[in-house]
Length: 572
Image (cartoon, rainbow, N blue to C red):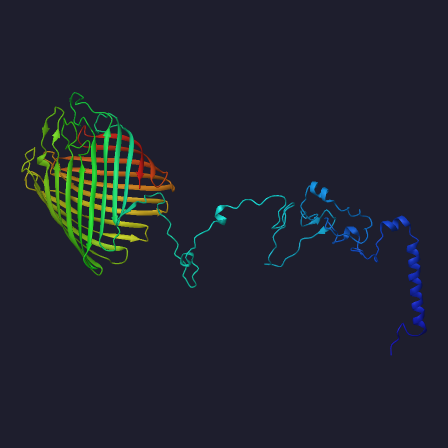
């Protein structure tokens, strides 16, 4: 059994020694000076709040008048203020009840000399929002300022929204997002019955350094009006499209009848129209069979500088070409066969000379009848090769023209190519072939040559689009000894959107005109730049600069000119 200090005589001796040490400590504390003891006095038996702590260390120290008072004043602190009368309370400036040191930083010491430490959080633990700054009242309180007036929309009565539209129906799939508008400044159009109708007109004016395309240039002011009309059907079956585009170019002055000591080779009045329109219709007989028809109209004049223009004219004679095509389209799975018949009528106005007389152009009028067939096969989606053949006969109103040549002829073309669509980046159609035309007059050689046709669109970037166009035609002429004109045209155009509302267009065109049997060969070059500022969907501002040049192997037939235009486009 072990020894314990509280047992026996030894234990009693130890307890007496401890009591003597404690009594000596109390006497020593009582001997300390009165002033020093008063400044450090802590009354542990005082039955008040914060009785066990120094005033500056108390976490419960009152920082504002709360209407409560201690049972006894705290040593070292001023006494609680006296109650404020009702009259004094009305004249006293109200102060927000902000706790002391509420605007202090999270580290260091506050105005009460208390150490402030930032709390530590575990990873991914939610952090509380930082406290409001000094003077910010608690949420829901007003501190002498009235609440701002609510907007009418906050308290207005709103009509209820269907659950299907709001997307709150249980089990409803998410609504499909609307597609981004590719042309935010394009014409919207109006519906007229089952047709979507879009109309526009361009008004522009500027200066042309050589409107007649003469060897000796003479400039004039120029203005142009160009209306457009487009109507597209919205039927579930069948279809109809009407596309009408035209322009009228006028000049502010005229040319003299006599220039450089001879008769002027260009008209004195250079005003001229240009119109192209067609109406296409499709009748769906069955799922794989459809009947189509087209009505087309072309109204224009000979190009300035052309050798077909008579000397001594007062104005350009206008010619019109009115034609139609009727055909049938049959599909056998991936194989598609098309066949159609064509008929066209070309007629010229009488020419008015500078002396006031009129001359006939009936020798240039002719009718054309022909047929066209096409077969295509879809190898894969986006790739569809085809072969096409066409033949026609041209019969003139007069057997002999002004140069005593018989211009009646027959001919056609054959070509093969493909239409394709590769990931929407490169789309279009390209083909090559051969065209020929034989004339009744044995003095006129066969008009023939290779033809290239293409219509390609390359979406290089979302902001840049490149186009390539190529066309070949067998045109008529009045030049003595020439069978006709083999016309080839190649065009490259690049559109770039600097902004959605600012578009730059660069265009370059190269063409060849081969007068077979006459020995004349012309080369045309055209470089054009346009800048379009789209103010709204209905109003555009357009500026253009174009340079045209004609090179010919005939001396004195070449020309060049520069055109500057500024205008507006109104559309709907």
